[in-house]
Amino acid sequence: MTLTLLHNPHCPTSVHALDALEGAGHEVTVRKYLLVAERLNEDELRSLAQRLTGDPVDALIRRDKQYATLGLEADGWDIEQVVATLLEHPALLQRPILDDGTAVMIGRPRTRAAEWASAGRVVVG
Image (tube, rainbow, N blue to C red; front, side):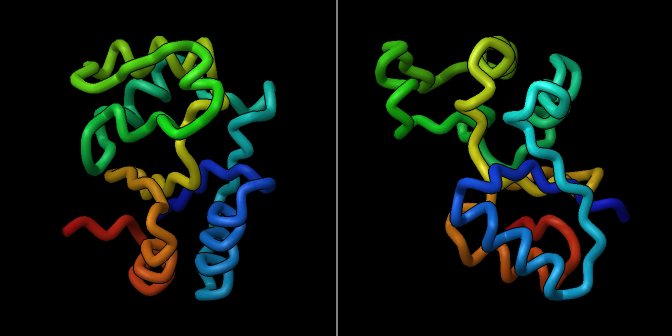
């Protein structure tokens, strides 16, 4: 199973998740999604939103200053609205996000990192 971590190295929660996964001996592909060369394309964002444990709008950082500045109100948004917003504003992608190839989960609260590290995959339920 390939583990991919959508990672922001400037986010302590994201760093914590990467450290926990690697500390448990898991091979993790790190994708620094804020770098232009590593941004997710439309199909990747759609797949992520479809496989996300929880509501697709959970993929957005709604407490971010940019979210407020843009005047966004994402309650009730469908996958296409989330994808369109993330294509235009990739910094609004929640982090960290673990993708095990089947399921996708946001690494908040921080305790999820320990669950991931122990299981070596996204832990649902």
